[in-house]
Length: 343
Image 1 (cartoon, rainbow, N blue to C red):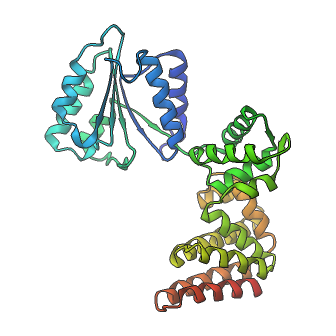
Image 2 (cartoon, rainbow, N blue to C red):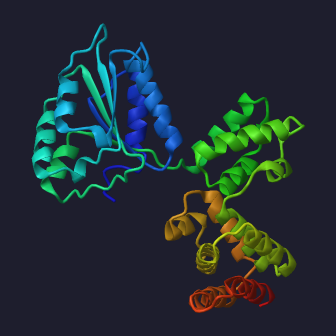
Image 3 (cartoon, rainbow, N blue to C red):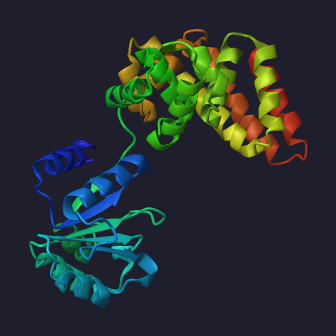
């Protein structure tokens, strides 16, 4: 990645522009964190369309129904009793247009009037421009590209704590991190889980037992609990978790992928420990989102030696081969967990 900016620099600059009211003319919105994307759209609508989405100055187009001619006509339409018009375009892949349309779009974007704000939102369609293509690069130079990525540890913990506070509850940073970990860290999912947990908790402070009682963890979080039980040689606990996953009809190949990934991450954590490297080094090595993920993996890795980690990864690889050549896939996975737990 170029050194000119960090992953969230564009998003931070966009937030600053919302506060000052200095809204640009052309945006491209994309990214995993749909909550932030939707929240930003709502803010723009509030600022630019005081009459709401039913007013004359709000225009929304779906990708399949949009043509360059329609877009050009919408841009040429002057605002009605307002300073600007807002044009939202959902799932129109600019970069898969014909070269002729791309040239026209480049010309249109180069001359956008001050009264318009055009936003291309990539939701179902994946944002993946080939910047080596000259016409794509010409389009991108006119746009503010905002990636709504999963939030970093500090801002996410503050956000979780704030939402619990809004519900009249307090939560420790450690337990907020735990909640983020077992839900995958996406704000959209976290909102519902915060609401459930706050309603369930009887005390002023939300505890980890409150979280475990009502929150359904994502698969990777469940697998991490299982591998941690394996590291502790708690084979009964590990087998119970595997049995529960199989009863939930999780696909064996998906389970094995998650187990294998976690085992490789634990081995990477063990390598870091052997070389006096910290959690930040592990995050970089494995592409982890949160430092509490890395710390949890480091804690598990301390319960295993490097030889055990390597053998666990090799056992997962062998099971992957076996899984493709047997009809007894559940038995194959059960055998793997027993082997890892009893090693």
